[in-house]
Image (cartoon, rainbow, N blue to C red):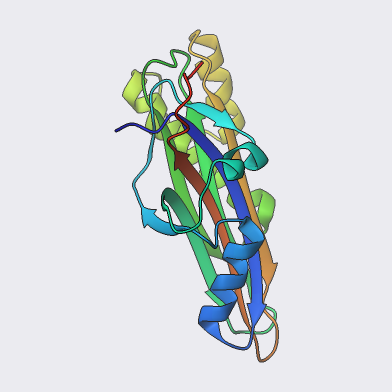
Length: 185
């Protein structure tokens, strides 16, 4: 039972009620009609990264949808929040990659996204036995991995927002793992 397709999505919800804010973020992400099951951080071997639209076209209302999800919420006016999923894919797609989730206060979209992407890449690099130097910055690490011949493909999806007076703000980012029934390629 291994998913063969993964798509990334994100959402934002604002409402006077906390739960409704989360529901609106799920709607914005296009995954409100599924029963979300939280899973950990593995991008399945041989799975294909699809567009949000393609992934959503395979979903049915009420189905179980396995997701790596990052979520953050606030009811404080002016408070910056972010939720991000980082993805790192190995050069050999017959082995697994990594997904990381990051939820933060005080960060914008770019900073949170870079951090989540770096986390996923570092998990994969250590699995592959690549040079891992935590004190180097993200761009220096990428160059080291490229020089080793082990090019790790990375990306992230991030939603950031600022809290509003008297309302709950929820941000989420998710990697949704789907059984498409199609041959992976």
